[in-house]
Image 1 (cartoon, one colour):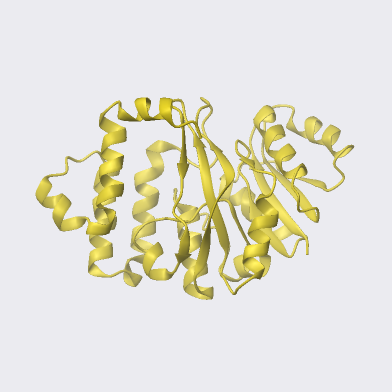
Image 2: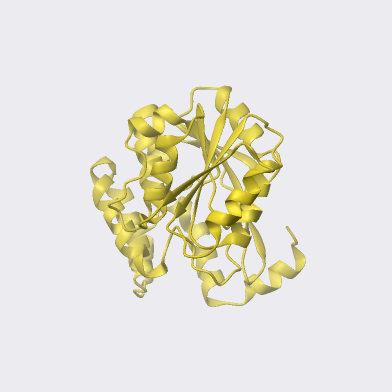
Length: 285
């Protein structure tokens, strides 16, 4: 069955080209590439028209007025032809077997969606984000452990209303919660299938750092009724971190569940020491 890969973009031809090529090189062949140009001011329209001569399965949609990344994604989802939907940011790229592996896993059981691990490239070095396993509602309400490297059926995304364009940020997290709440557990594969680029200077179309707190707080308020007392406390702890509030040992013990101690300690190490720099010299992912 056909999968439509939705790529929102805004004035970033070189990175967009890399993203499109990563879809073209997929081992899964029944693919529709849907580029949604969110009012680019560069030569994106001309560039895509040239690419379409060599990539016949490349569709181009253009917003004359910017709708933002989620507005662009939603338009792509609504107008896609594929049975499945996959997501790709214009500054990222798939590994060659990404779509084949995701669709095979999705079809093997009744999941709300299937996602995969990431390779993250930063100015400090590269690292792997790996949190595999079943993602049920209880797990996703603690922390966002799903990824944009995902596949689901188009009908499922449309049934839950796709991306919430009213949220300032964390729209992906919100969508994962709604999909899992409506259609049951998701699955994250223990396999790196997506390269997430953070090393460039350009602002990502999906987020602006100054909006992160507001978006995550909106997401917290939207779904807090589903959360336990402990889940709410941990969500509030992470919101305090986004604001840069000083966290006392007492607050840490009270608000962070034991299972997330390693994650939080790892974040502290990466943020406040140079250990990360040294580790990347020894581990070349």
